[in-house]
Length: 133
Image (cartoon, rainbow, N blue to C red):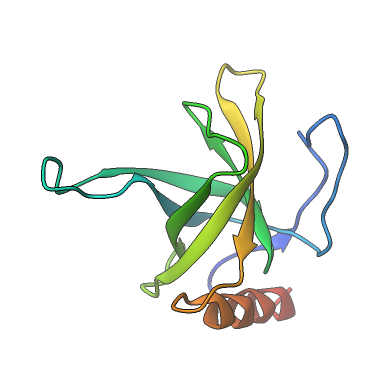
């Protein structure tokens, strides 16, 4: 990941309640695919949306969406760093969703530590990216 430029995030566009972050955030571009609806016999694809993060940490991330996401929703996610082929399967919780000035939505996600996900590998990858700064 050395060729990727990640820097420490700022407090730009945080929810009105303030900053509840427990960790430093990195600004940088990671791709996240959220599964909003599971596949079914009638819809074998389900509903999946792709986003790019505004900032991220081992325990959460912030993104912009063209549609609001439901707070407290638990969603399967796949996250990958730009320039890296590694995909981290994670479970995320929508912590907050606020309108942005451009008509889109700002969304705060918390990464849930869960068996059967790539949580440990994710934490190690983010720690490695932070160590490169």
